[in-house]
Image 1 (cartoon, one colour):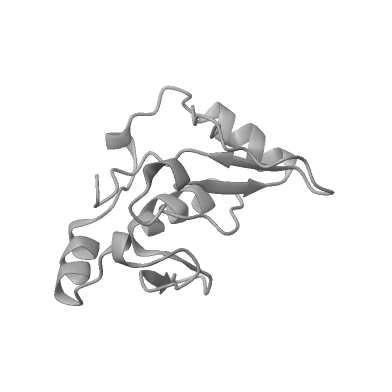
Image 2: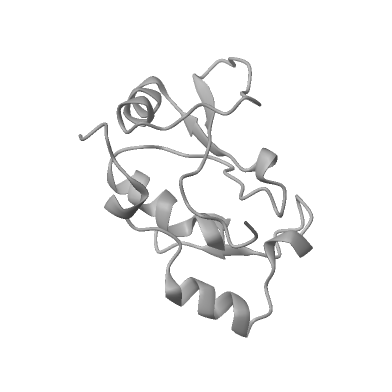
Length: 123
């Protein structure tokens, strides 16, 4: 894996997702955390915030396992890609992701929070 990846090196928030969000009048900042108004089901059957979908699918295709990631719903300080497992954590570090300052303390499974590279629609 290339540890010097730039945002342009992988799929980001797509024009199709932007169009759909506008068409359906979905605004991340209008969805409170836990309401799931901007949530979509991926082709693999798990759900995520629409604006993070492409980045999470790209990470998944590179062997990174994520859980409960969140776009922050208008608050960039809450935006997080939550990664579980030592291999996934190592891959995120190799891919040059920055650990979130709001990192989760260790649980029984290694769990880390990273800052998304997707330019979020409310930014």
